Image (tube, rainbow, N blue to C red; front, side, top):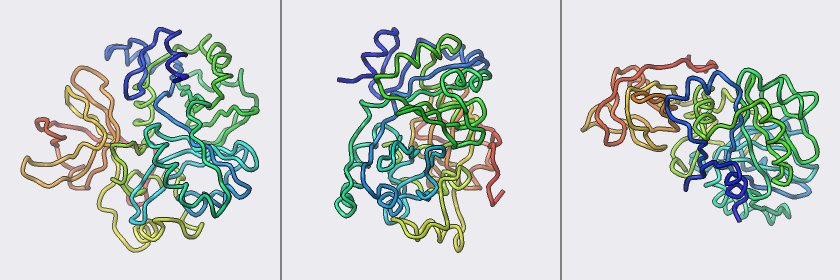
Length: 344
């Protein structure tokens, strides 16, 4: 049974086939949505639970982040790569208990991540479990988010990626007034009831827009093995450790930092287009030209405007127009990211 479907049905919300949620918002609502505090059900996100006596050591050899830094007050953003350095997923790791770690990620990648990690699990006596129906994830954002969440979680952290934990419930600071909340489904109704006293429910697209404006890209099934970590600017998000030692794909990632030149990276674009491009869509400068990048994520913000995270070459980012998929050429503007990259 889909726990989200049952819960959202009681709220008169819509759960689409891609697990996106809608409360009936229209494009015209977005200006007001961004100015108020909103609570978003993240039904498009899943959870993989890792249990082992050496769970941190097990994941250390597979992921880009340094699991020695994971604690009950510190979450870890990271990625898993194939041997060629192409990302199989992006995730956030949470320390559930001394021998248990939760990896939150796009729901459509939990099964493939389970399969990939399971090849190495016997060496660490690790057990892997798709816990997507055990844990619910919520996004809380807006001007009063920090103050509101303090009513549920005392001693909220100050720094991004830090977190506070109450039993099996987590509050992770993504940015100022922007939080990821992870709770067992058995606790969801209580948290939802408390938070929606002052936060209005909103659909998945509002959270996606928040992530676009924060410059936080995510790998989904459509972009599986499409990007190396630096293409999504993961070094700026603290999701890559260049000191931890070996992991699958590490040679490619390290070589790109110390010896190579990154030919493509992620930009925030505001595109004049009436159609929302899907993740993975190829971008070109001319109809007959080669691909110069791909869409990471996108959201329509008015009838003829789309905000998107797009991996592009520097030449394409400096152009005035771009062709996305099979759509006509569209003009766009670059929007500044809230962080600085070494090449900037």
